[in-house]
Image (spheres, rainbow, N blue to C red):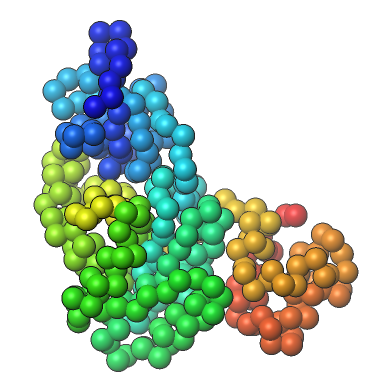
Length: 302
C-alpha cells in the first residue's frame, strides 16, 4: 500500500465505496474498510472517488484530498445538482415493461452520460413479461438505431443467459446502474455480485445509518474484475446542469443537419429555415424525439 507521512498520522490511498451525508465508507488497497469524513467540513466526496486519507482512530479516517476524476456523472432534482458517481466508464440504464417505464427518463439518462463523456448501454430487463413487451422492445430498437448499445435480458426468467450477456459487458469496466424504481436493478446486482446484500449490511453498520444508506450510490467489486455502482431507484432524471450546447450534442440524429440552418445561432425552435425542423417534417427525425428536445431547449438560454 502506498503510504506517506502527514505529521504524526500516516496517509493512505483508498476508494470511496459508499456515502451518506458527510460520512463516507472507504476501502483501502488491501480491502480494509474505514468510516471517514472530509476534512474541512466539505461535502465534495462522491462514490468512486480515489482519495488520500489519514487514520484518526480505529476504523476511522479523515479524507485529506481527492484525486483527479476521469469522469463524473450528474443528475439534477428540483433542489440541487447531485453527483451520482465518479471514475465510471460505463452507464447501464435499466428499464422494463412493468412497472411502466418513463421513456423520457431513459432518454435523459443517456443524454447525461453522453454529456459526461461516458459510454452508455440501454438494458431491457424482464423480457419474459408479455404485458407491455411490444412497447419496451420498440423503445430498445429506437435507441439502438440511434447508435447506442442495447441489451435484452430477463434476470429472473433466465439468469444463466443474463449472466452470459452481462459478464463480457461489465468485465473490467466500472459500470454505474441507473433506472427507475422496480426495474430490476437490485436483482441484476445480486446476480453479478452474490454477496451484495451482505456487503450492504456491512456498509450500514459501519456508517451507523441503518437502511438509510440505500439512498446513496454504492460501489461493489465484481468477482471477475471491474465494478458495479448501484444507485437508488428514482423517478426523475433532471438535466438542469446541461448547457444548450450539451443538449444539442446529446441528440445523435441531429448531427447530419447541424450547420445547415439559416442562422448560425439557431436554437431549432421557432427560427425560420431551420434544418432540424425540416428534418422532423420530412420524417428524418422522430417527432417524439424533437418534442423531447424542445422541452429541454426552451428552458435554456443560448
